[in-house]
Image (cartoon, rainbow, N blue to C red; front, top):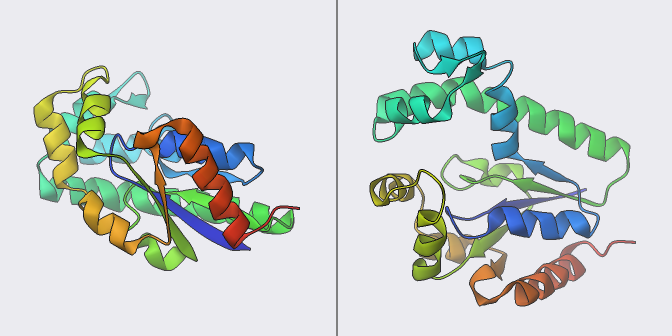
Length: 195
């Protein structure tokens, strides 16, 4: 079973691209979605203990937690110590299930694939990209996003140019979704023709 690692900086269109793979029959494990589920379940007591006041009504309040960790390297490292093992457990369960069903390929959607050393968990890397102008426009259109927050998030991510150099395949969402769809199809034809 081929493990495809999908990554890309904030605002590049990674979720849209993951959906393109899913529509073509590739099972997708979304690390961000897993974190959202953990923030409403098993991670809540651990995060509240480490970051008092970061939860509301039995769930992690992402806004409050973000205020506590964005730009604070020790706090962010502590959060990652809590969350990453739980995400990894969910990923392993996903892979085991895909293996049981005889899947030829799976997609691991990992936003910080290179930054967190996840490259050794996948067979190849697909990087989603777009121009810096498109990225900025997309991110600043999000509810609750500010230029300062965008810059703080981008600062902890590997630059897009470096990610592109590490990619086996590039999907450029800035040139239109039709072209991105064709790039996904070409990628799948090259690595794991679906039967």
